[in-house]
Image (cartoon, rainbow, N blue to C red; front, side):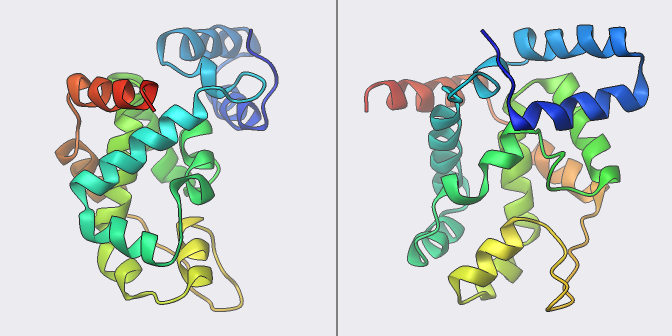
Length: 184
């Protein structure tokens, strides 16, 4: 039931950099079936709302000050995070960081993507909390180079991994939040 999704191209491209077309196909199949990705790459992206709800609750619980700051500027998870989760950060992160994220993803599974998002917010907590406009925060959360302001963002892959492992979640916590979503 998986259809083409723009995010799929980024994942396929990463796989094709390291393996043959046939091996890429089979690894993609495994990613879809065993790493909880199929609902993010189906027409209509049916799992995306669940993922956004889950991450929003995790952000509120783990970094409440950050959650309040984003809410103060009417910034919702759905405005910046879909690309993070649909492409497992390939679209938004520098390549050396992507490789470390994918090491974690392939080892721990989809749940680590939430931990990575929390780690990114923790790494840049002071910077984001100092931002006072919707536009500045949203531009930053795209993790892209803004040439007009000359503000490239540097992410230390080792620090990101360390923080992501610090925020590693128990499956029961994720299941609890997802059960809450099912009842809303």
